[in-house]
Structures are given as structure tokens and as C-alpha cells.
Length: 199
Image 1 (tube, helix red, strand yellow):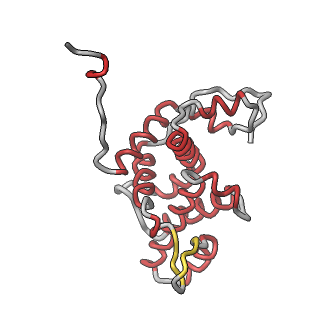
Image 2 (cartoon, one colour):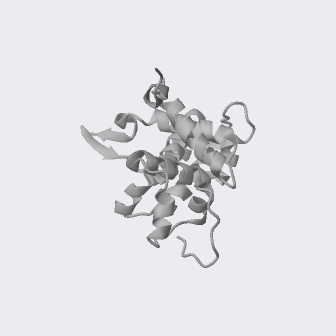
């Protein structure tokens, strides 16, 4: 005899990128202003790449330290074109990760998420100028820079869902009268009210 329990399935992801892609894609489909699927694919690749902590930190004189993204961005121009591509991509992707999946970490830093967002958008724009492309899409990184905040919002919501296992996080913030950005509300399928306090 078949029971409701026997109808349940366990779904296993073969890789982290697929897991992140599915999560971001599901959120993107709910958004009133969805981003191109290529942006979702790229962002899931970034999340997969930085899943290991050694890619997230620098080791200097045997000590583990956070990467100083602003300094790396400024120094990139003095290197060869190939090295510039590597540095710009690293800085841009790290900024995306910090502003998106690890957005809460910026509350403990001396600089805020807007600082990292500006660094990330600048790095993606520079990456576009040194002739780098993604999936043979012309001006991909320049276009991605214009949707930086949209992507970080999707990533931040996914991180909240993963952390709390709660799909109604935005709704709960609204009920508690906490600051909710228009973008968060749009992605969660809610229409921002003109009188609501937003961040």
C-alpha cells in the first residue's frame, strides 16, 4: 500500500553550482524584474567557486587574512593585461559574494555594503574593457555590473533561506516593521508600498 510518506522524494544535487543555480533561478522567476538566466548561471558559478574557504582569504606570512579588495582594484592597472583580468575578476566576484551571500558580514566591517558594491561594479566594468567575455556574450560583464544590486539581493535572500530555512523572511521583516529594500520586496513578489520605510 502506497502512503503519503512513500511519495516523498529525496533530491540530491550532484554539485554545489547546480544547487545555487536552482535556488537563485527559483527566486528570479518570482521577481517582478527578473535578470537574464546567464546572470544566474554566472552567479551560481561564483558561489560554487568560493565554497572553499581558502579561495576566500589571502595567506600572508602564514596568517589568514581577508582580501583587501579596494587595494587590489587600485593596484591592478600596473600589471599585465592577463594579470589584470585575473585581479578584476577576483575583486568583482568577491564583492558580489560579500554583498550578496554574506551581506550580513558587512554590518561588522568599517565600510558598508555600498562600498563593496561600488568596488564590484567598477571591477566588472574594468573586466569588460580588458577583453574578457563569458559564454561569448558581448559586453557581459558591463551588463552584469548594471544588475549588480539585483543579483546581490537574490543571493542575500537565498542565503537567508539557507540559514533559516524560512521562505517568508521578507514577510516577517515587514511584520516587524524592519527596513526592507524595494528590491527585496520585488524579488519576494511583494509590491513596495509608497509609505513603507525602506532601506
